[in-house]
Image (tube, rainbow, N blue to C red; front, side, top):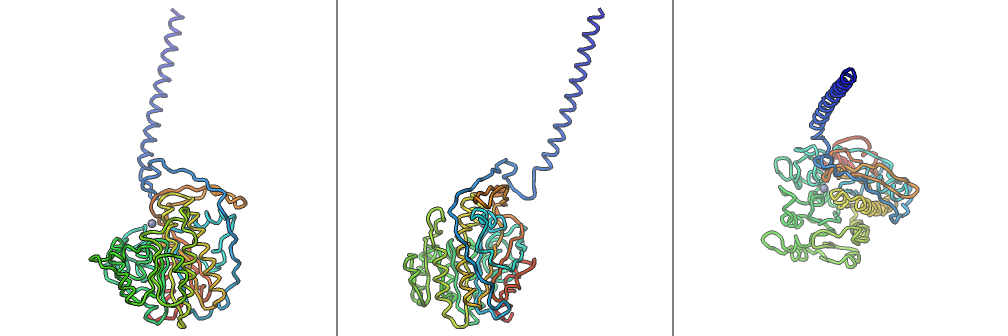
Length: 410
Ligand SMILES: [Zn+2]
């Protein structure tokens, strides 16, 4: 009996312990579930965190290059004759630092000593798209996502390119996307939606832009009502070309350079020196105007690398854009009357850097979204009146600062 009693007692004790552990376990897992529910809608990422798709990407051994050593600007307080606005679409701080690390710690962009930060939200969303972002730069107004050179109510607003033209300056645009894509479109067109690329193409004919080089030939060839705008461009005196080797030969006159039917290939696919060569060609033509010029250059595909969550794509496109920065800064340093502004419309991919080595060029990153993020993005300026761009301000202030630097009336 005492033996039986002991074993009964042992069983009861064991059962009690089991019950306690079980109920503890249940309440713990309930707590976890509660927390999981709370965490289910993180403010910063729509899907990837939930789906546990965040993966580290390791990039190493990319071909590096030596950045240029640009002397300080000759006339930091002097008159601004020319403005070159360089937009790295989707190029936040982490995209820049990823490229800087992969290039073993140095980029051309470091030659800029005036740095600012811009708030990128649009009129209707915390996270902007490229159309609203570029319209803010081009027109100085916050508008809704998708708007091309129109305000929040859909009314056309004059762009800095159009204002420069009215003041007798030469104007130009270069992009690695279609030239009718959201960013370049916002500087020249006025349409309710970025998707209206044929209408955007026809808006080019309403201006006197001197040089534009990029993809998007098909939107001109088959524009609204299947009109062939390439013929109209020729009739307006443009040299209409579709080979980069021909485009770079042009030294003077009006130029419409189409380097692709729609979008240009990526750097990894062999786009080569398209952006650098096109930018230099544009500068050489535009600088002949004695009153000065306005040029917008877009590194369009840094954004697409971010959307693809492809760190290799992001870095190679940022390298390409930084090489353009080197050439442009070189021109501005020699010219002495040029203001260079480098910025982004927004960051793309919610990229973070979680490892790397500036000595070897190894960089480890992870993306938190396949869309844009809302984080403030940097502005770098060099040349005459570059100091205007220091500080933290709205993306719309880029327009006002450019207008003031040119000395144009509002
Ligand atoms: Zn984008």
